[in-house]
Length: 363
Image (cartoon, rainbow, N blue to C red; front, side):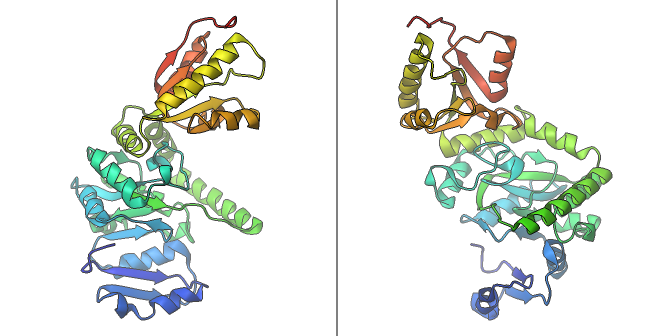
């Protein structure tokens, strides 16, 4: 997926899968610019990346996760983003699973591409819709990161304090920020990131202890970092928000939510007309948008299955309460908003909302 003249180095961190060594030992079969290096012992992500940084000498470096897939032309677009400004340290593409650069739901990584699109199809849609804003973000993000050599020469490589691997890219990125560099999003590029990893109970506990320790180290070194991330993640009008919105719309169309948190099994005119309107609205809007019905927790599974005949998704509203920033383009509520808190909740979830103020209990 890259030009044959581009140097590629595969670092085998002493993998226990015999197929890796068997496949890549004869590196020449992959071209003169492909290199394979197998380490004698596993030193983790930090050690492998630092080895790669050193081996690349004065070149820029792109770090890629092994569970990622790439569309044609990805490297040229990623490089263009990295050189959009003179002081860029890293460039990161959009993905389905990448914290604040996740699409179609902002700040909500998912394990699949919506609509069963291929990575090529999803990327083509996003590339066509992009305004190439190159929005700034606090750090590079680990699924795929273009790192400019100019930044590495000033910041140095990953800090071994974060070995075997968690938080090292945040630390490197923030060292770059304090030296005057910035980090950008390649908002005309989408890659697929599988993201999910399974660990044994013992392995999960060990990983969580390491994560907690490394996050504490980040907090001690950069006490301003978390507030910065929270602000960037939630700002509905920032260049990042605009880029994510365009990418999400390109993937799934306008995102419409129907507030059905007030619907319950009690048969009243309000419940009947609400369900009828959900069915009618969903059938119409679904042709042009992605429609989600928000319900309260514990909703009967039978009612959920019935609604799924007419809309794309039925989700507990609580799934969205902890996410920063509006998650929908439009919210529709077929019941009066009786308190300022009702309006605030709708505004938090969507950029625009429509509320029916008719009393339909006798319908």
